[in-house]
Amino acid sequence: ARMAHGISMEKNEPPRTKPIAPKTLHSLITSCKTSGHRFRPGRQEDAHELLVHLLDAMHEGELFAAGINPHASGWRDRLPIPRLDETTFVHRIFGGYFRSQLLCNKCGYKSNTYDPFLDLALEVSKKSLDS
Image 1: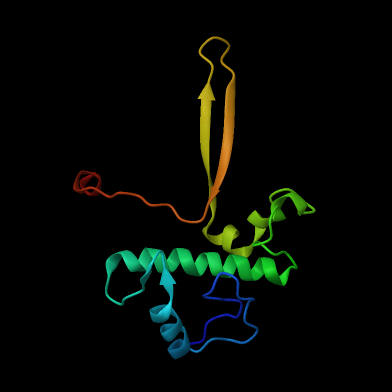
Image 2: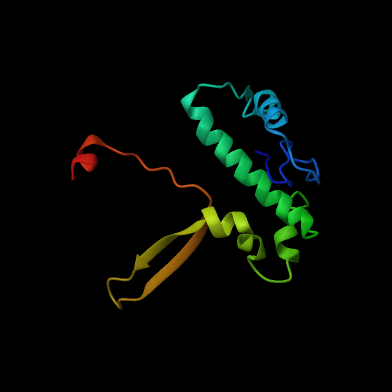
């Protein structure tokens, strides 16, 4: 199997225009430094870090392909449509929104704030598995 184009393992590297072979992807992942350490096969925490890194890279690749440089200062303020960056295929498939709601006890007014996310970490306990 081949990976879709547009995946870049370096933050400031423009997206690739050719498919990536699995062997090449493996060498990119194992040589990639994130948060001061390298990805090492077999470590549980690396799976989540890899997922986040790949989703970010695919998201950035789609933005670059649309002519948007997400590394430029103030790039969100220059979008033609607010929150346009939240409409990429990565956000449509993996993304969602956290809703924070404040309720006024006096008048009953509800204030909602929505914050986008690409991954959601949930703790699964034994108690929740049994229910």
